[in-house]
Image (cartoon, rainbow, N blue to C red; front, side, top):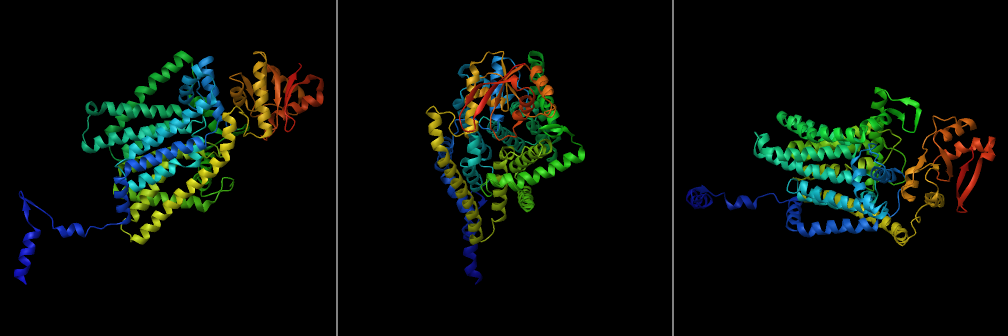
Length: 561
């Protein structure tokens, strides 16, 4: 037996150029799993899969394209601030100046071209997806990356906002670009633990520039630099913290100085900061939040966004759902904790960094924004990053499981993809008839009769004398549909005695209001409550100038002081 073993031992340990070659049998015993097979197949077909993902994103972007403004109003606000920046020199501090300034580049020579401005969001969404791929390429398993890319590319929520002029899709593009540049910098730090500023200053400047742009795009974006500092502190790379802060301030200080000198602009945080402190953003009468109130707001927002909005975005809860389910919040947090544990255990610095970033910006959002906002777009920005973390955690947990268990895991992800396609096809089917009419000139199709009449009347107001101010409930939308004409937007009445006709008249006179639009917008009838006491006490001071529609009609009323 000893003689028979010698040749085998010899052949299995033969040397090539002085190096020992491992036995061939060891490679045959390599653990081949379903996830390994999928990763290899995806890597081998990456170009074809990328083309499919990007084509699907572009195709569905146009199928879900909305050629009309959203009744939420904020998207009109960004467009109006872009118009005012170009034509009136008003610096757009509120809600972050960068996005309106970006839009103003096109408004300056195209005017308020709604379709083109929305097309810019489609482009931003494509850039976001492209740099998300570039940021995580070869840094996480292929199955994790490509499955999340596909879910993101066809997600109906993201695609809907990709044809709006809200700032979220623009911010997502900056977010992906930031991660791309920061991950490249992490690679340099990995290859050289003593990376000097002389060797890396260009990389730090790119990271600092994008972080600054993110802070200028959304108020909560300022936390990007905070997340960067926290990550470097967790990694005990303290000298790089100084590089990061320095690179950010290189852009932040001079740009803010220029804003002050040229436009005398208020800081975006000053412009919006007082609203964050209110208990109710729609009523100053409710007072300001205290410390306990902010803590309560944080937990309420956690429950709201993790149990309702996150699952709605993924199509796992009905869009019409209004209730929160605390158990789903615990499900989300549990999945997150398990996933982050796997990421830390495998020392994937890229997912650790993106998780720190997502947590920091989600946290500051939940602390600052009142529960009344309840907007899916506020967490939608971070959904792709959370999905990358969750799918990676699932893949890492199951990497040594049996083929059957792994197949069930993959099947769950596939079901998630099918749900995205199903929801997107449904929305596309509902949107296409409206889109066709909008693109053929009927810009009011898709609105309820009340809204359509309101916007038609707003458009008619464009012909009124410029010094005749019109008061209305949705001023920014009226301005967009009246090609930039100024309206007085009245969203809340807590500083007006709405029961006293003289008090209301004094308010209108103080604001130089000549006309008022009355319309059925199902938004609390704010304007109607203001006009009611005047109509009762001084009916002769109100005269109807123009009426639009016969169902849910809108009226333009002239004030006769």
